[in-house]
Amino acid sequence: MSAFPKASQMRDFADMNKADLLALAREVDIKGRSKMTKEQLIDALRGAMPKELPKEDPRQRLADRLAKLVDTDRRCGWQSAEGHVCGLPTATGSAACVLHGGVDIEDLAVPVVGRLGFDTWPTLLRHLWLASYSIDPLGLDPIVAEMAWHVGNGLYFDYFRVEVEGIEHVPMVGPAIVAGNHGGAALPYDAAMLMLAVMNEAPLPRRVRVVGTEIFNMLPLVSHLYRKAGAAFASRDDALRILGDGHLLGVFPEGERGFMKPVWEAYQLQRFGRGGFVELAGQSGAPIVPVAIVGSEEVHPAVAVSKTLARVVRMVLPEQRVDGVAVWLNPIPLPVKWRIRFLPPVGPPSDPDDPLEVLETTELIKSRIQAELDDMVANRGSIF
Image 1: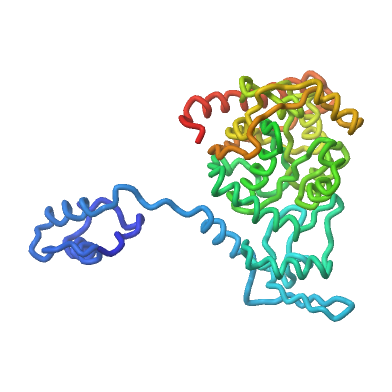
Image 2: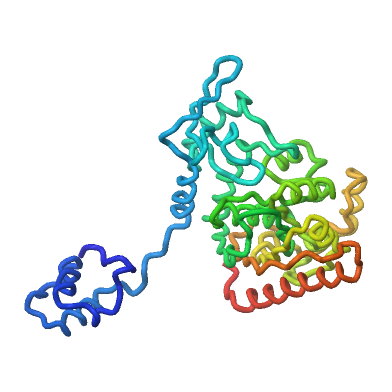
C-alpha cells in the first residue's frame, strides 16, 4: 500500500465530495473503491488511516534548519597572505563564510558547510590547521566548538534522548540569562545538554555561554577545550561582557552544592547563592529564563558526599572552592532519558543594588524551577 496522504490532507472525510474521496482511495490503493458509496469510501479511508503519524526525525529537522543558514551556491573569496583561498560556502545573506565574517560566531553556531557530520571533519581540520580565522575574546574557537557539537549530539539524540519543551521562551535576539538546576556528580552533562538544546531546537542556533567553576579552568587540556567549545569562566567580567554584547549566558545558581548532591536529595534545589546572577540581569537589563532539567541527577548517582576527598582536592587545587566531593560507583554514565523545560522569562530587577529585590527575584526563580521539577519527576515514569 502506498503512503497515506499528508496530515494536511486529513480533514474530515465527510466534508469531501465523492470524486475527492475516490482520488484518496486510489492513492492508498483501496480495493473495490469504484463500486463503493460515499459512506463506504469514508469508512474505508478512515480504516486505512495510520493509528499514529510517523514521528519526525529530530536529526533531520536540525539538518533542514541548519542547511538554510548556508548558501552552497556561493563561495567565500577570502584569501590568506600565503595565497590560500577559503572556498567555503557563504553564510546565507552574506558574501563571507561562517569563519570569515558571515555570522557573529559569538552568538550563532552555524556549521561552516551547512551541516554536521564526520564527512565535514577533513574540511574543518584543514581550516583549523591553517588558523585563518579569529576566535572570540573569551577563547571560543568555532571549529573546535562545531566538532564538540557534533560529538555531543551523540549523547543528546541517541544516548540521553533529550526532550525539550518551551524552547520558544528563549529569546532569539538580545541578551538573556538561562538559569537551571544543577546535577551530574562527575561531569557537567547538564551544561552540555543545555547548550545543545538551544542549538538543536531553537529557530536560530544561538550559543549559550555557560559559566563554570574554577576547576574547569585549572585542569590541563580541559581548561582550553572548555573555553574553545564555547563555555566561559565564572567571573563577573566575563558574564557582563557576554550579556553586554547581547548574547545568552548560562548559569547554575546552586553551584557546587547542586552538582555534588547525593541521590536521595535529587531534584531538591539547594540555595541559589547570593543572587549574583539576578544582579547581573539587573545591571545588563537581560531577562532570566528559568530552566528545569530532569535526567542529570541519575547519570552518576552519588551514594555519598565526602569531605575528606574535598580536602584532597583543595590540597591539589588550593583555589578550588569545594566543601564535598560526590562518590559515585558507575564509571559509565547511565542512559537516562532527559527532559529540559524552558519556562517563561522573568524580568530583571529594577534596582540591582537593592538586596531585598534581588532576593525576591532569586526566590521567585528558584520556586518556579522547583515546582516544574516536582511536576516533571512526578509524571515521568521510568528514568530510562
